[in-house]
Image (tube, rainbow over all chains, first blue to last red; front, side):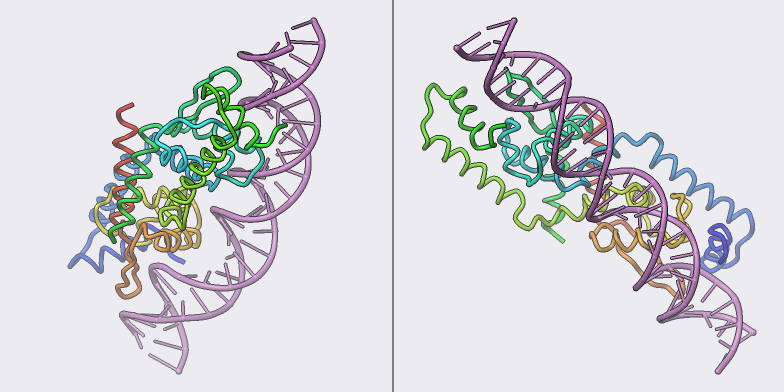
Length: 130
Length: 130
DNA sequence: AATCTATCTTAGCTAGCGTTCAGATAAACT
DNA sequence: AGTTTATCTGAACGCTAGCTAAGATAGATT
């Protein structure tokens, strides 16, 4: 199997009327630049990594839907895992800047951040009209 | 350890001046309703599940950043996995409605969907101002 | 201070995800 | 038709993410 750059050369040969080494290099450089733009220390990645897991996703959903802070014991109702797993998941959400935590005595209140709200609401909107 | 509903009762007793069984039941019902709203066949979930994986995330990023369709051999430059893994990942993105696929001879062109665009752009915006 | 409470943390196990390999497919060219 | 090309598909395997269990923590209550 040909390597990716080799196939890109053939692709360009197909697309352009005629194509020289410089064209191939330029195209690869362009893609390289794209990669830098797209990935260089991407701060949004942790949020998506967190929401990829169903437990964390459901908890984030609950917090956004509630439109108010919820206590851990309330959040447990939304998922079917151990209390320990809920605690783990909530810590992950906070680490990903998808939730905030507030202490009040023995209770811990979690709330959705603007990041969580905008991501889930955008998803709902975008999925709605297709 | 007390069960979640038991703790919710104590939580309400803390929050409300005084609290009866009806209050606890109402609160739990409210949360139940929230759960239905939030999860009943949530169509946005597959998109987040797909973007949770780094390979798929990077490919989606590349497609959004490119603002044009890209060929598989071009997309391979963005990730460090086998050509087969790229193909698997792209299929997953299409299944999650994050990308579209177009055939042209032996080449396959993928492009970001509005869902992918809006999710990643929203994330960038929300992460930007915090 | 001793106990109870809600939640967190650490450690270890396991299921499942994401990878690779091998072979399949379909389009184009000879 | 046979070959080459780009990509896809299915199966199998290894590793890690996410789970549970047990104990730790810190605030409240007695």
